[in-house]
Image (tube, rainbow, N blue to C red; front, side):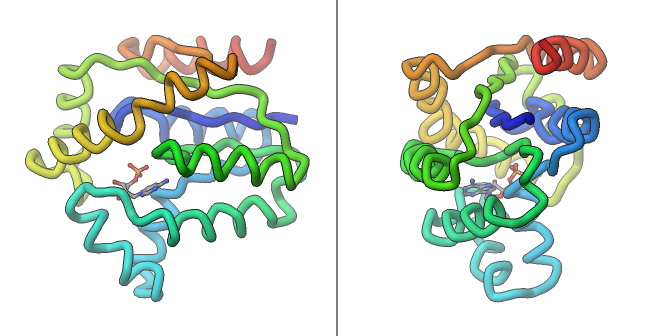
Length: 184
Ligand code: AMP
């Protein structure tokens, strides 16, 4: 049973590492960003509402995201666990998640914080070339991260649920650290 939350700034390598580990642990990789991008591509109601926020690098409003995550964590394939990537993104989402996991009787193992320096983040994001990776949008996303998501580090540290991993290393080295941590 593996239930992990991945935390870290945009460009930390959360998505890549979460996907690799989810495969190893044979649990679904739940990325709210991926779910939202699919919704945008499909032109669904959710996608139409989310698109403007995502393009601007802002967070999609909580009322859209909370329903989405509740529904996702209630599906059958989470029986063996999950890896959350991109959720929670602010304190209200973390509080909601805590109640939801209690209710669903799905206690998490811990939160992995991928620690990455600013210079490394910007270089990686510019390289990636996703639609919301244009320089001005990157700066907004970093600012949103600092103001809304970074406080989650203390939120989880205070609850003794935080483990930090050095995300400045190569993809392979970060992956090796994560594997050691999860397989312990
Ligand atoms: P990501 O792929 O995790 O970087 O997410 C891409 C974009 O999707 C973010 O910049 C937000 O606009 C939106 N998004 C993803 N997850 C969340 C979330 N938990 N809360 C609000 N917005 C989110």
